[in-house]
Length: 372
Figure 1 (cartoon, rainbow, N blue to C red):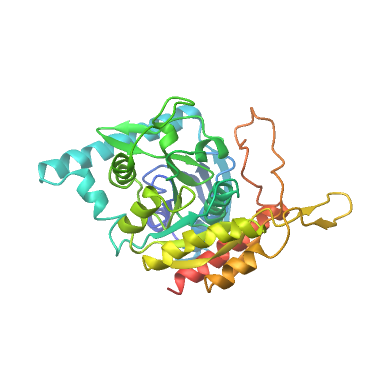
Figure 2: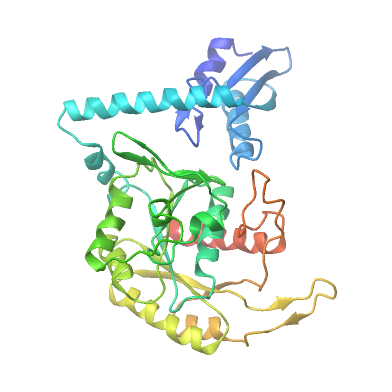
């Protein structure tokens, strides 16, 4: 049977996904008790609905069984608001100390960030979600794919690169703004996804009247001045069409892959083919096609009505020599009370039929990028 010291040492190898420190350092493991037939402990979480809950429990159980615990009993509780504030302040202070140390060594935080997220060997998979025209649900697909990847245990960030038509914060129910510490921006995290958007930096409903070079500079800042930490996937919600921002993304991220969103309507598929052609022209891999608003399914009888016709997704996939990955029905999430802490206008629940379709899309994306 392992000792307390053995247990603590094993749990120092288990990382909390949001703060990227081990459970012992963060004091998230408490009330460790050793019995003849099992080890029991209390695991503290930052919120009741964290998407990493089951993943962390499994990692704790695995770590302790590897050192000889015959069985592991994990109870879960949530940190108080005061504990969360104190822990966040401690992590920020540690980060500031690292920044000061890097500056003393002649290295800026921006240089360190460039060497990680944007480096070809960083391990981050960049996925650009694109469409030929607006109004096809591209941003809805982007945010739900990001959340589905996070639910699958991946470290995910999303950049709202639709500079003129930013909508990701509203879609995800985000009301706070990113923290800025010593010129480093910390993205807002929601549903396990780190989020950055132009919408955080302009007044509500204020127009963005910028030309191409300024837009490109803002986009570069999203990579260079934001502390993303380690990411498995970075989702980019591109503006529709083939304008300056989309071209900047393709030039900035030669390793990014593309997901095309269309509706079944022939015109939407026709214009989406232009965005796909730009991806191919710039030698970017197309992962596949998502057909959104594919049909309307009656909640009473289950019959499907093809409101926008049929075949657009298949036709687009055939033209781009790729595959139609999923067909998402026309509809909206069944949202809770807007005052609820987990409210969001556009995120589908994991246990809904559409949520399961996005989970399947996430699995396909993981499979296709792991084979690359």
